[in-house]
Image 1 (tube, rainbow, N blue to C red):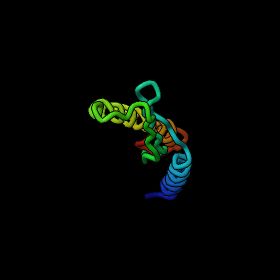
Image 2: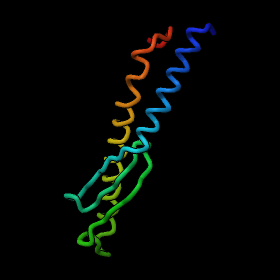
Image 3: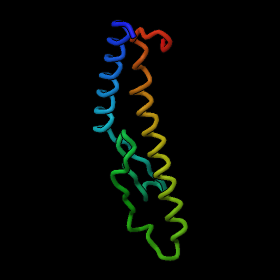
Length: 101
């Protein structure tokens, strides 16, 4: 590996580390049931909290509650993945690494 490629790889590594650090401080929220269920997730796709409104908890509606939680978690995960793609997507665009640009 020549010196130029090594320097470009170091720049990319530094940008990736910075993007990962930024993602850890960002959050997204998914919800379902008109806000009855809320899930908060970090930009690194770690679920931070699940909030269930007391109005939706009824022993007879366990299946509905499970579906609502699943929908909220899925929405938060999709938003987190979009956030990560936005932060990581342009990292190689300004680097001149042969084969990657």
